[in-house]
Image (tube, rainbow, N blue to C red; front, side, top):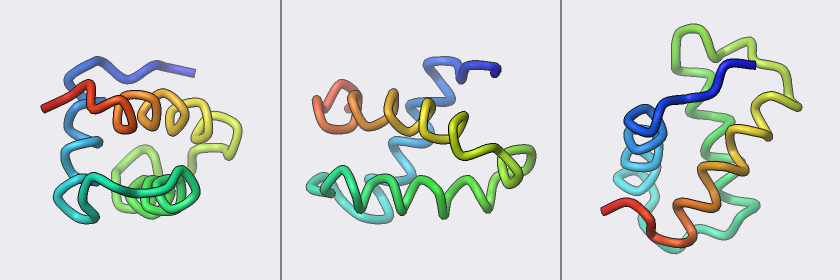
Length: 68
């Protein structure tokens, strides 16, 4: 699986924060990320294990407020 660049990770986290705020639970974050993937060309058919790998990386950064 190809990894997302730090800039791509930031953009996804930014979109999620803009859409849903800063206080999502991990479960809600996962739902939002899966929905977001459906709207991104090339990610709409991503397998669940690959999607979860990406979501776990994003969640760690989102929950730690690593990005502004």
